Image (cartoon, rainbow, N blue to C red):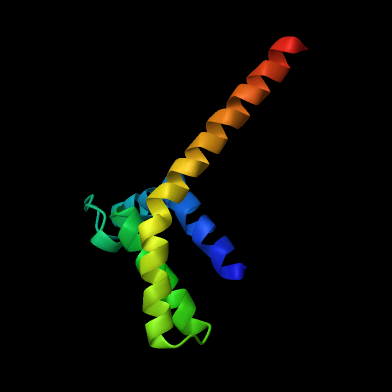
Length: 102
């Protein structure tokens, strides 16, 4: 269950753009020049795969299981992202409906 919550958190962090903002601020402070975001963090599939793999290896899973689950999580990350988007739109419409009725 913790693994599923972790994957949802990774997808949501990517969705919010937190990684872009942190990288932009870091590059502005340290290098004084804006660098493009690196590959593991600029792609949802890559970020999900690598963060999932590191999480599973740290928690003690064997390598084959870790790689397999990480590939599955990366494969499903776009679907999870789309589901989060649909849920956000439904909640936005629900809040708008409630506000207009009050």
